[in-house]
Amino acid sequence: MAKRILLVDDEPLILKGLRYTLEQEGYEILTAADGEEALQVFFEQPVDLVLLDVMLPKLDGIQVCQRIRESSNVPILMLTAKGEDMDKILGLEYGADDYMTKPFNILEVKARIKTVLRRAAQPAANEEKKIIRVHDMEVNIVNRSVTLGGKEVRLTAKEFDLLQLFITNRGKVFSRETMLETVWKYDYMGDARTVDVHIRRLREKIERNTAQPEFIFTKWGVGYYFTDKD
Image (cartoon, rainbow, N blue to C red; front, side):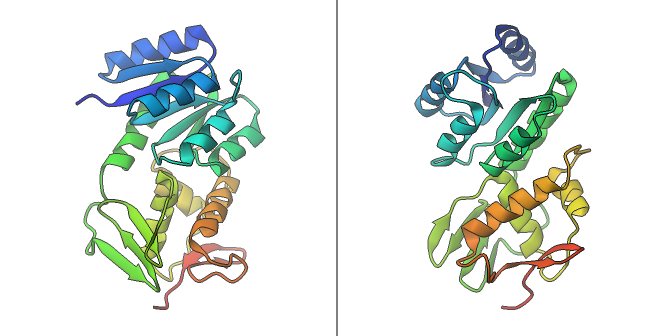
């Protein structure tokens, strides 16, 4: 069954070009030209991935991303204009899985889409345990779900990838550079602040008190690690 992608951009030529190229790759494409239309389309039809421009009429891409994240973990790949560093960081902070800078190379777009869809669809391979329990957290590696004290914790795809990296390597300290290489799984050109943004949001979701963490700790000057204590 073809994967369905929602393209959101207010530039008709970009929408037309992306739609044509991705349909040639076998994807089913939905389009929207503003933020309100994007949400309407998204909540009316199932979508496997959202390719979302930051600068949109009516509701901008950040607002759209926030609204989607209130109820869905669908992968979101954001498009930003060159030099919009804050938009990049904000897009990731509010739940986007990745971003690309305009003007973009269509081959890179296709590669990013395949990577994000593959990561979202496939459980981790060669894991010895399907369910990992630490304190009152339960992480299901196969269906990529997390509960804390019996309550579901909604994570983005990238947040789950980070948590999985940590929880399957408890006590190991990971540098920001290593996390970028391991979790993003391709030549990622973002800066290391992206990792800090994701770690902060992950902590906000799984730590009862971020000032006194139970799970994710900082090794100052080195990176981050997951507790090695049961």
